[in-house]
Image (tube, rainbow, N blue to C red; front, side, top):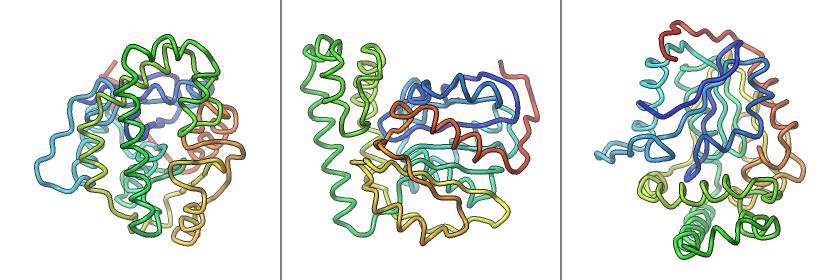
Length: 270
């Protein structure tokens, strides 16, 4: 069973974080969402407090889809709304293509790189960040207690890293290092998004204008590939926009999950 948190009431909305991150990424928007949705925050396999991602030779998409379907079953969810960031956004779009959800909202979703150089850039970026995080060691806690340091150290992922408190930032740092095996498996199995999404499943895609991980021009490819989706920019936001503009992101998530009908078929899981 994937680690998760459940909060709020209303139609169910599952939130999926990005590669190397954890469910805490959604905390800045959680209270706002929980006023209108029953929110489920999950840790992906090999991330946060979830069990490891077992690389058994199957494609990464199959592994992650299986984990998501099992999670839906154990939580008693029947075609919930889903939203994700980065890898989580890609998972949300794949879930929509498979008809598993009532709507999908993706924030800077993975899978829209244009060529091998784009993907090589992502590999190099994460390799550098992981190396820096591993080397930081004992220096990280005192550094992260200053807002200026948080802004600089988190700059690859967000424009307002200083908005995170020191404990959250340190937890994210440790979480990324711990998720290194899963991160390697997922990146090694990466391929462009090429699935067709049924016309009756609403899709929303939003992209940070200051995204340094999946560069904003990839949003243009997403527009061409998914012309029926609702597309918007997150002005001034980085790759993980929830901490950069919580109000704007919450609005997009609520609007994106306002169409279709999602149900909770069991309430046996506390």
